[in-house]
Image (cartoon, helix red, strand yellow):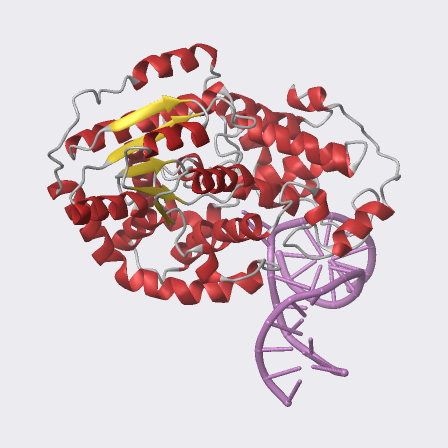
Length: 430
DNA sequence: ATCGGCTCGCGCAA
DNA sequence: TGCGCGAAGCCGAT
């Protein structure tokens, strides 16, 4: 039995791994877990590899306690998984939504003539169960997803007990001799080139971080989540991006401490479940999810109408990256992005809207925003990244009063930051 | 401080 | 076919 771990990089609450264990017990064959490190992942930077490898060390050690050998191989996933499949009776995949993740899985399916199972484990509601089409906006997905989510909630405690039991009691006995995997050496290599970021990877860090959030921040979430100066947010998106923690485990932890009817819990679940899975829905059902072509018609038309509007400022992508604009608020959030690998969600909107305003064309702006997003954010290259960047250009949004450059796309300005929160305090913190 | 207008189109009710 | 309403807004009038 082989489980090719790719999207769900964790042992806790991983349905694909649970399925693989159950299957290996059923067919009485030992289970091996494989992770393929590819240094070709588009836009991936050393800091991302460091974060990911820190998580994989925990995966290796947790699997060792279960007696399951873990292999970290460097190369192309299609070749490596095919090679490992030769001796396997069947193969288990987890599910990924990006083009490259789907392409890897399809290519392996074509190349390997074994039974292959794909198990979805990184969303609260499986994407095709929630909806069978690309949704227009949060309003249209929300009732569908919340309807399925009721059943998820009913069963969530049972599921947690089940998965905890599995991790506590399962022990594989046929352990191959050569299964010691030296991730530390690979990690050292990436650490030499990596920028410093504020996050340490791994499931245990994710749990710790989320416990702090539950204890000190969640009760104030409704009131303060849009106040970047207070950072009343979960900071969990890098861990979700690498599958180092399951959204279901986060939901379970939340339900253990609070009532799902509490307003602040509902507001948080709106982010964790509805908005995150709207992004997954968009990427899953949209061929060109990384292009302005996938915008709704009204947005494309209005951007076209204003293509040749005079831009008051026009910065190059390097000027943006270095934080050298005339706007000290903007430069501050760019600094947070460069130096921490993270930015508060509200500032991400302002940040992107201003690049849109201060670039020569929508395409130039889009390319600048997406490439900085994917280079610096530890949670970059996620379905949420693609949907959020296009939201700046009107995706999942409505039309507003027409104005220069933006047309009918929603506009934001610095006055809004001052009106809604203490922007000076944010600048100081950064 | 608060409020209406701006503007598009989905999906439900009729 | 009509109508309400929406991912975090802005602006001017009161």
